[in-house]
Image (tube, rainbow, N blue to C red; front, side, top):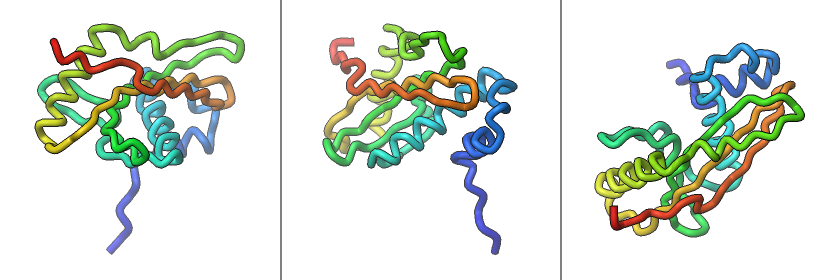
Length: 150
């Protein structure tokens, strides 16, 4: 029986092998690449990936990971942008109030489906792709709070 193909990092591997490929990627592919970069980043820091692209009636969470140090279930929104080498970018600014409210509803669905979940945190991983496939990663811990009054 053959080995199952591991597609978790396929685009990341392709871009590592051919950095010029990043310039030809569509917006959707850039987003997928950013999620693969964020996942690799989080795994190297000891986070345990619980779900990628978790979907429920409220929408989709890019990544759901377990922070083994704190015991928190972390919903991670990944934002990725391409930028010239000298341009400042802030992908995390795309996580507006509407998106934060949606993530709170997604978290509620996840908690109900995976009871018991004792602590939830919302992080943002912002990925900026520079020429030559240089990725800058900004990890915003507890980027926003779960407002229980909504």
